Length: 200
Image 1 (cartoon, rainbow, N blue to C red):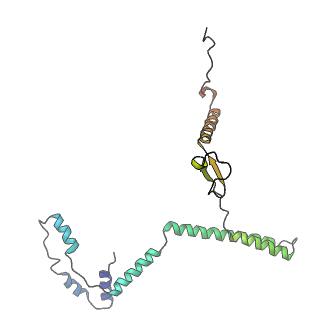
Image 2 (image 1 turned 135 degrees about the horizontal axis):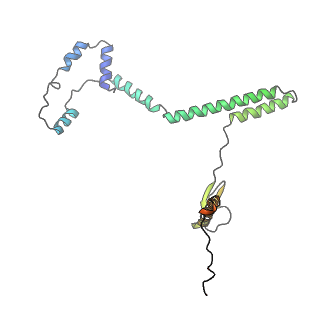
């Protein structure tokens, strides 16, 4: 992991401001020769956080790391990048398809130049436009202010469908009848037949 200290050290080595031997000599300090035998774990954890040398850092190193982090943050997420690539590919495919159709129209001898230009313009516009969006149907539950309402509910735009508990039960009953009709006769529930001897 890159830190300002490591970047500063690398810059010093590249600029020949220090040498490998000098770095080895700097490694022998009071921080490196401490004995850790018999010390409690909480003390060792505290020492690893605070008892370490303060290495000098430069503004250039901090700036370079910040610019690198900004570049990493600016990169799109993998899924977003894949979605954009798919979108771009589909747009190119639509344009290529429109170009092929335009070539076919251009080679047609039964049309005038004006008709050809108009047809090619329509094809190119169609090739540049995205695919049609599906019209979502908004579901409105028939309760509260929408209970027993006739006409369009307030605040609802576009296509809508009003549903209630009765409709839910009817849909469930229809699905049950469909399942029963697909079963053999032996597996169907027998209907209740009145006993002729009852009441005699």
